[in-house]
Amino acid sequence: MSEPEKLRIDKYLWAIRLFKTRSQAGDACDKGKVKWKGDPVKASRTVALGDEYEVKTEKKRWRILVTRLLHQRVQFSEAIQCYQDITPPEELDRVQFLSSSFNTGKRMSKVGRPTKKQRRDLGDFMTD
Image 1 (spheres, rainbow, N blue to C red):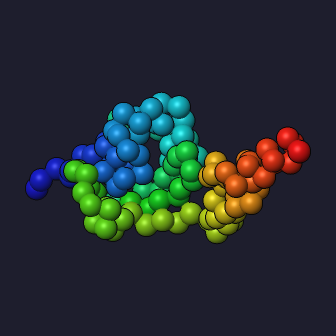
Image 2: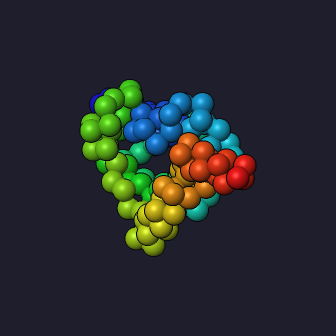
């Protein structure tokens, strides 16, 4: 009988694309942003099918259920089939509210700095 496959949590979180790099996933584990049953986990923890993890990324607090092990990073469409997102609805509402109120840094139309035409008109007004 073969031994069950072993997969580290940092590699799994990187493979399912919750983190851009494996070192970011490892840092999140070291900082206590990845929890299993409410306890922080080390990056070397072995992932098993059916485990539930709480993962805090920059944008969202995830709750994921492991449905399939993934050893390599694959396309997003394949990666999302390896876990089930069981994030509570109130967290999803919070993320949606934050994204709707996000300031892009671009100025809104007709607000802020004047256009070139408006600057000329102001210049004409000030010199007269």
